[in-house]
Image 1: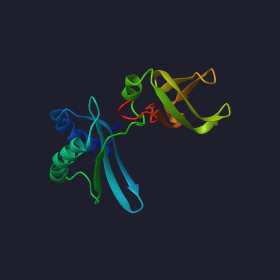
Image 2: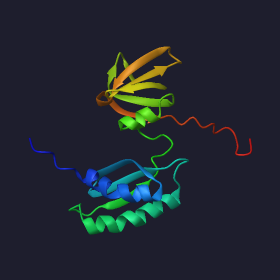
Image 3: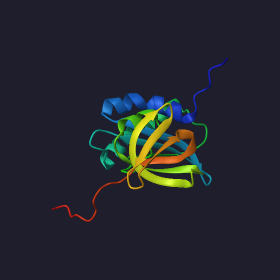
Image 4: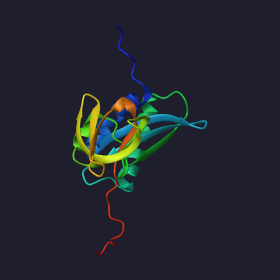
Length: 165
């Protein structure tokens, strides 16, 4: 059986990995997607303590000539580099494993036991199945990654407190 040809995002990720490592960054996610009539190559980068606009700009300037030289994308596209955000989507097994014990929000593609959206503590992740404990409703749900529209970290920052408090 022939090995599947890597898709555009996989090729771009492999070009980016050495740069990211050199810069002390890591690739959280990458997407090559079309919105309207425009294609976007989106890198979501992260590092310990989080990234800022300078990290995004630095990586964008570094990856742009690498992509131009390799020319892995046939059509024109817009390059975007950003943080995955505080409510980042968990898409890869290591995302789930790294965030065990944290609060998450999940939305199912189809309701399960009458529930489509819920929040709780990510208790475990194994073989593509996340176990989320909803303490408020005293229940635990097992959700296969294939059943979820998304699983995202929940922003638990207390916005009622000022910076000085």
